[in-house]
Length: 229
Image (cartoon, rainbow, N blue to C red; front, side, top):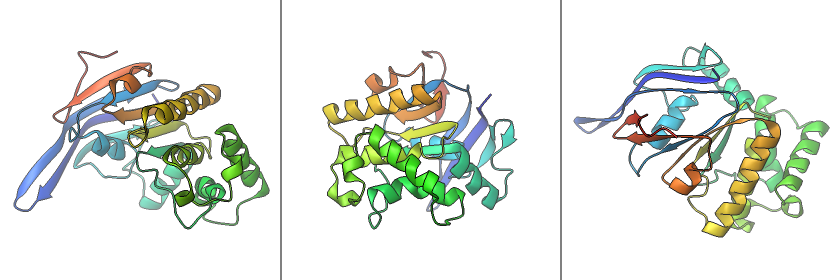
């Protein structure tokens, strides 16, 4: 199994009270599948996604990637694991405004190499990815000079830079109009199919979820497997 979660719980303290966002989530993600986790705003989708990828430590529970405990890793090893094995596509793009489009795409390769100067091979690969998502002519532009769709395609190219085993997407078209969102999704699913990668996305959009090979519902901090598709 590529990714497994066992009884993930996440509680936040808000003043004097505790809010339990995840109340015992368990799931398995197989190599090569596309899985959507659907839920309303506030259902805990993003919290679950960040917990699964090592960005937000659960209050309790276990996350395994290829059989290895993610939270059993030391912080430096966990950061390396994220750089090497995971790719992220966020709703708000998370591009660095001071860098060019090409430099943003190169960031995962630079993180993997402990921020050494990017190699010629890395630059060639980033350039090829920008060509694939139709942004080669924007390579020297900065994020604020791009449309929302162009920024999200840049984020998609960045997510694929290190050939990660697992792509994680948090409402990847949430800030885009339907036409632009459809174009971004076409790139996403085509590239993942081409590279035989695994996709885990969270969304409130049922139409987006239906494009995945499997769908689960997150409701009140618990996964509902009864309507699994």
